[in-house]
Length: 409
Length: 198
Image (cartoon, rainbow over all chains, first blue to last red; front, side, top):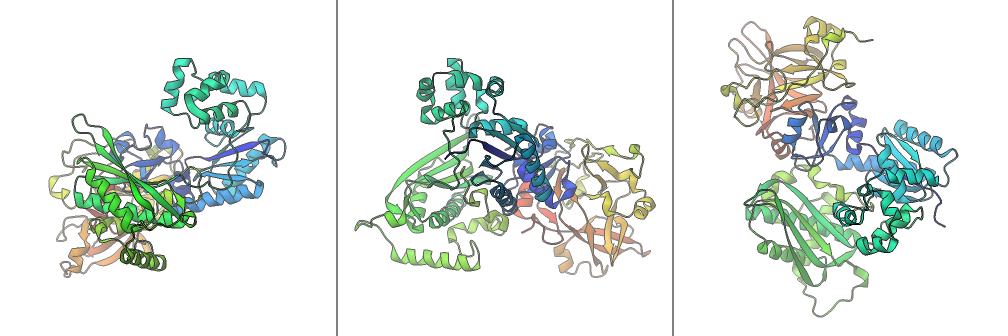
């Protein structure tokens, strides 16, 4: 039986709030959390936001906007620990909690006492006192409405949206792009049809919405009408795709360094394929590169289908290298490797055509055994030697993708 | 109730100096470009300490209320120690006692505020016989970028010909992360193996 009430919890400035728990000197300060290689701001406090610093801004631009800002290296181990405390707290008050992202959760709010606003404020206060994280909450009849409400209640806000006339008034003042799942492209598709606000979206013909935005858009239409078309997912569904990569923290055309990054990302990808016990049929390589004549960034992409579903390091790294060899030679700033066409290992029928390399597989198994005993990347491919300084920093070993069980990615 | 009148606090909104053409040598504070001879060895030329970390007696004795800043409304007060100050000072634990000392050498001591780990290990400071000290700090400033310091920094104390103590900040080759963050090839030595170090 789906819940009648759905709540959305969203931590305020989550990374900064986590850092403030262990460093009280950061309270009320303009704080920026830096990404993997220290080059960009990946999260900021409201104080820093007021100076015009945006997420993704290079640190040098951020410092120009906010000379008094304090910069901190990200620590996903710590953020995961706090995130799981939030999750555990919600699981005490709700029978169904969705671990949507590291700082957002949906949950069944039927068991909240009345009045709802007071109960949610009490929970909000309890989280602040016990964990130290300020959160905003929204309660409504669907996930989409609850999330819209919590987003607009920030910071440290609470809202309940149940009465039809209140829902209508709320939707009338919300731009359609505020809906989670409606990005700029969708906004541009809707605009020629006069759909600018969430109210316009809800009032539009459902079939038009389906035509423009597929069944996903149609589900959002139902959600805005108060019908829960998106259930609370208490477990992460089977991955359609697993990816690893990110910013290189540098701009390089050096083939040795690019290969090193490639192999590093492949090794991390294999770890994840092993964890989920899946094989991949297809690899995609994406390179973020600097545009040539006009500046800006371009993305090069390449795809290869493997001879057979595989999670073999030897097979995948050779396939990835072949993609890299095809890539445009240009200053590269980021890289992502995606494993698509995933299938569960125990469901795959082996074939006589499978290309196996027993010796390479033995080496890979030995590497895995040693790394599980001694530590991640204790043994790694020689191709990664150019990245010795990256590996020598242990905090580079753990990325947000490594926080498992989240729905979003 | 604040200990000092509100006029003692300044909300520091100093812009980064862009006057110096050398890469990122500007400092937060009363901004003047650094003199070229120091550019090669300047590392973390400013630290900041929460005012709660210093006893009142020390603050009064060294008139540190002049160095109080509030970075942003509502934030805690900090006491700033910049090498560029007319009277460069730095806090340090010497033995078990916290004191405020002259930052950098004078007289016959090396006229700098820093000493490299390599030079110490090579014995080049043997005649000066420096002793290791801990420097408490909440934030550090490298080329205009303020970063968090978890426990503090390492330094050495050397005495001049009049036995007056002077503190030098210890430096080491910068970690990859510190280099990307600050574009500095060297960094301070952090107490407790700070996250910026390898």
